[in-house]
Image (cartoon, rainbow, N blue to C red):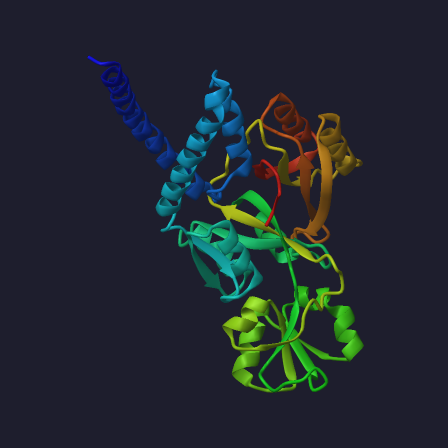
Amino acid sequence: MTELEKAREIINNTDKEMAALFEKRMDAVKTVAAYKKRNGLPVFDPVREKEIEKRNGSYITDDEYRSYYINFLRATVDISKRYQHRLLEGMRVAYSGVEGAFANIVAERIFPDAESVPFGDFDSAYKAVEEGICDCAVLPVENSTNGDVGRVLDLAFFGSLYVSGVYEAEIIQNLLAVKGATLDGIKTVISHPQAIGQCMEFIKKHDYEVVEAVNTAVAAKQVAEWGRADIAAIASEEAGIKFGLNKLESHINSSGVNSTRFAVFTRGRREPLPGDGRFIMLFTVKNTVGSLARAINVIGDRGFNLRAIKSRPTKEPAWDYYFYAEGEGSIAGEQGTAMLNDLGGCCSNIKILGSYEKEVKL
């Protein structure tokens, strides 16, 4: 056997071994895709990809080969992602509004392969996941200008779903009207209360009458259907394109930095992992002196940073409240377990709404 033949035999045997390992890897990828679908997680995970490159690159002892191996590895990961995308094509994602709504835009950015399913309001979208009609729901929880979306926080407390991730998206509000309408001719604006609050300075400046709608994209649709030149919608540019409206003014939100945080709600709770850096919890405190202060201290004493805490009425009994808290740190270890045990001494109810690696900017 010549030297060339020996080399080719090694390549053939190696390729045979790699083919078997490739099948083994793709079987694992299928499991990963099913987990992501069940827990409402996106295919693309940049942190995980960097970890793979760093770890696997260290396995190559020949410096000359390492850069070629990294390219080989990236191609393998791309194939893995393409397969996951195909497996997730049947995923259904609920959102509130109609096509062109900000939630619709965000849902398609997080889950580009899934079917985005519109619902008339937050409750309907949430319930669709509880009933198994959809795999997950993308709902807004907070705006940087106008604050919390109270109804969604209430659904999180009273409902059965969990949060698998939080995503921040820039929100650019636009004044949209039918063709032929002018800025001076507009007398009334229609939009969701959150969008109206975000644009209140602009509205007051022009002395517009305000009409509330269930959703920004619904408002755009109504303006298009009415065909009146004296009514405009506050909505996304995508909604204007969808319903054939002209953009009379862009960036009409009062703050130059206007973003909304969206949460992905799923039926299954993703178990906390050591690499998680954020968590959300809901709790009520016992009716004893200092219970809330003790709860806050417990979180800090166990090494977790409390980024935000918000109170909302439980409605029954009157003047009773639950608390929505966001913290930094992984609750997967001993300190997380100890924190939850300690909270049991001052809290009457505790629900870990979600644990995830970090907040993602879209």
